[in-house]
Image (cartoon, rainbow, N blue to C red; front, side, top):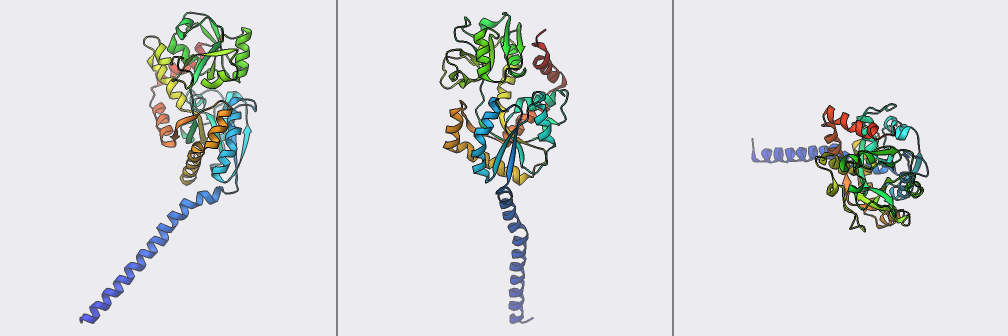
Length: 345
């Protein structure tokens, strides 16, 4: 073979290699870029339905309504908030689980603890598998606290140990966990108090002696209530103890549950099977919303704080997996405490 023939052959092979590389890029590289762009183009101009588990006047629904325009801004969509009260939140959760997995239905500020425990405990009416939801992320701080009357004699959580008293919540959850951690063995949970304002008024009337609330809730009724104990140290309330400081001997696991469940509060959740690129798009939009000063200002006006850092889908998935690892007797024990032990006899 002559030198000229060899040179021509090498040039031909080079051109073929370049052509092959171009074809590979066109098929895989370009499709990858198109895939990355496809979620954004899919959402542009669409309407997202954001269901909530409680009524229009519930704090969690108000938070969704305030968040909705900011999420719409980051996704290029319209966001319609749809309250679906019923069954202690089960109606909305069933609806979300069974919704089309196209990423256009979600719960923007879900009560994650009740999503998970209702399924974990196999409560009546639950039609969903709790571990299969698509967890998107979290933007709002959750610091569950206990409020008491402004002039109540209790100076710290230990003062309620051994005392008979009524505790208000929308439905039993954090109250029983606090009771276990702090040895409030004679506490009775009274359900049906959906708003912090309603709980504050009930405390002032003597119907309740304590109730669940966020750390910032006292700002709304400073003449009626004050904080007794919180899950974590609270900004603006440096003298309020955290639950770990007052826990009774041998009760650390209940403190761990309280802290863990706070991580799952106010999460954004979608149905199972949402395409991965759309779930990633929603997560990035949520993270941009969290970082937006206008969003932070808006939720502070209704007495919520942004989380100190954005909580990713990976972190939420890790927490859900830790629940999957719970033993049957641990689940049974938690269910008995939350759903039965402190109910009115």
